[in-house]
Image (cartoon, rainbow, N blue to C red):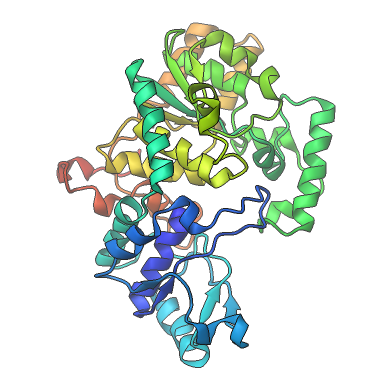
Length: 399
């Protein structure tokens, strides 16, 4: 959501257009009815970017449906550059006056964008997109409670129903749970919620995807990885996620190894959360704030939130983010669990694999014509990271 909003500000700035405060998708799996203003401070968003882009809260009446006006709806081509928007999109506004982009995810290229626009992407993300006072107040309270007890790890445990159904990953699930995920997957496909090639596959080879590193780590796998990385029973761990698939049964090993596990639901007074519950984006905003503030951030799946949190932590001084190499970890986990790799060797191998995956400075990896495979701008906006740190630290390329 944050990345898409930032990109649309850049498009508006590039084309010298007026941007209407974005509408949020209310038809996804999460069925979150939140509007932009329920998550972000609208006035701050408009005012903080006033010198760059004209942003209005809503369309003028003459362009509203109520008055019979029909905006032209379209989805920009993914990972597009400035030339595409100038030559293909800008002429549409002369003809239609208003263009409604109904898909805004990954619609702007990671690289090849002029420097001032790249820096504006950062300004929108790090300064323009401020959460509402209600979210910020509760988010800062969560952080304060955790910090009062000492350093803490934010574990983005992405073992949630939507992710498992989306990825087709069922490792560690019962037969009944695997069937439940398959039914959900088919229902989501029919609703056309996701547009990925493998989504159309009726049968997905879960174990094959796991071996390729395409599945989130299970809670049990995450437990072993955390222990191998040197975290002990005294480690305070905040679980940044929604409801874990399989509930407490799947968290048993994690809780046994790390007794000081907490979630927002266990830290806060029950009276403080109801206004945010049933609003998954607002709940995620709280997790985002805690993840950014944590001493160590560890995502079990390298998805959109993990990438944007990583980028935010880089911006704040390259705070430690341990980014699991899931493909290599699955290999090591299986060797250890089948008795081939003793614990000490397993732990050493895990630490060695992640020595250069701790959020250190490096230049973004660029792969021409393969934007999905190269480094994501919002995970490592290196154009914006020299201010406040030593630029010479950023000479290396991705290890």
